[in-house]
Picture 1 (spheres, rainbow, N blue to C red):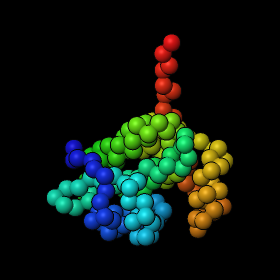
Picture 2: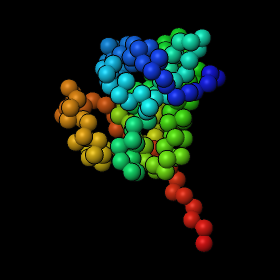
Picture 3: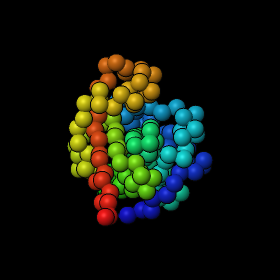
Picture 4: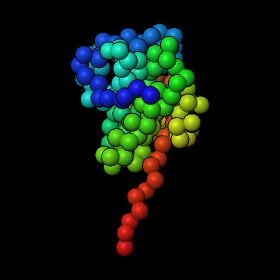
Length: 158
């Protein structure tokens, strides 16, 4: 498996092409180049021979809530576990930050179920809906599936 690293400024154009190739087919939401630069610190990438072959972002929404966004893996290396590794890196970062709940909106619910996510009603995520979703061209007729991953509560000693 290839190494997962934090994205750099030099990765942004390749990430943009990768994400928007899927968006052009209606498989994920498009992301403008400016947004990728603005949120570069959210992203993890997998590179192969200097080429970005996968990316995913963990975007913090609130003290107890984060979103996994823009999980994309190049067609030529799909079905090799790269996407699951990217999601795992996002979940690990959320845990290290003390964020117990991670959600996503997706057209690939089966993939996220395999990663431990469960379906949830969009209205259970009001912060997301009223801070991001209302700006989306698909609002209010979102056709993505809302899913959530809840980390186990830490065990308290004593």
